[in-house]
Image (cartoon, rainbow, N blue to C red; front, side, top):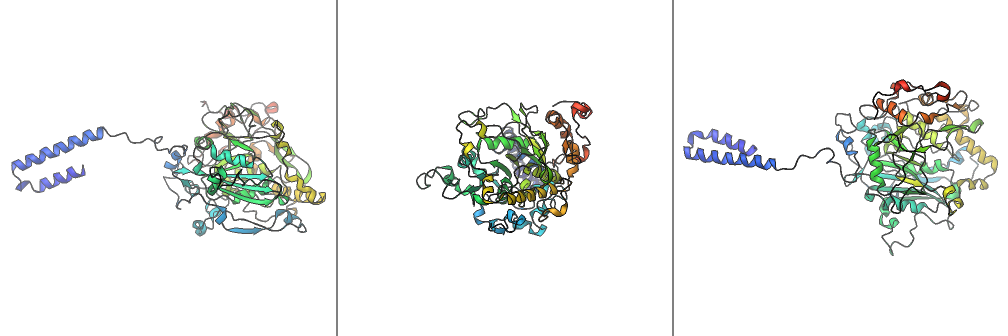
Length: 544
């Protein structure tokens, strides 16, 4: 139409010099142009809808990206996107003191050279990435700040998978299933912390045959997307330290997964889990669960055939004295009562966690918790809660776990555990290291037993590995029936967690999709066997 307008303007300017024949010819040409344009536009395909704009295999988070977090006036990240894949092989390194030596300096364990945390130079003017992303939890991130984290490749959101492996023969199998069963393996980067005994264990990084003989093997074909940090198993101090090292291997991917080393991933797991996360409509969503057993969960081609899913709702205090802590027990499993979106739950699980990459940037595993096994989950869970993150169980699982008790071959029962290292230390030193780690863990999340004083545990790096200020730990305790005065929990929380809790909580999801607003939640769970149904008045009138 721009051309026709120019012609009209030109004809009007020169009308005095044109004869009637020329005017008539110009009119015919203009009329023909208009008619042709209208007919052409009538036959053009319709403009793409929001659903059409979703890239194949990318899930539906594109919806959120259209409004950049769902409520920040369409703002975009002020930083250029990260390249993918990156690798720790060219990353800066730093030396750290082994966490056990921090508690017992006389231990003869050498310092370690480890990857430095992800903190790209573009964040330096802001004091670093942690300062930019809410200043170590002092305030909730904005949607724009959240969007500053997350690389893409070919338009696809990338996925970082951290695997902590201790002398595990199924580690390579886990890595292979991650790549071979993904819809878009080019979007995935895997980091393995491989704790092995040299000359005894087969490294997770070793393919069945040399790569020059068979380059099609997963470890060969995707070598640029896999990093291994190999350490002597004798210096392993439990899953917390290993997973801390895994957090250090993160390099700006859009999503981040924490996985065990004996897990099988389902067919198209990447598109499935991204779709489910997107359906939560919550930038602060963390999908996490105790994985179901792999047996009877997948068909021969790797498809998910399980009709139930676990949910995190059962926890109680364990142990006595200085090492008393809140431990999550065996979780119930049943059909999902909420459909087409994940279900809110109170607790975080270490065996599987899927979130935006900024989750492990903001809430990394604590470097200074040696010999901690039980207790890691409530540590990350409360720290994540205080930063504003919300925990969900997926409607369908993207992967399944190999448990020793269900393994008919007996192989999993022979896998070594880090506790074997206790033989190399005397019992008193092991107990001292364990107590020192648990004192710090409980102290940071404000769950210390009364006999533990603040001067009895290590306070280094508390800002880096501490709690946020978006929510208070006490809010978590009050809401979910955890009584710190007598170290008791309200029974039967699982009757509330699930559809009921989800329907009440989801009413308070912030309009900008930056998490559940707990300032608007005043409910405190009470045992229904004692107090009856205390939540009935809070349920919305309409059901989903």
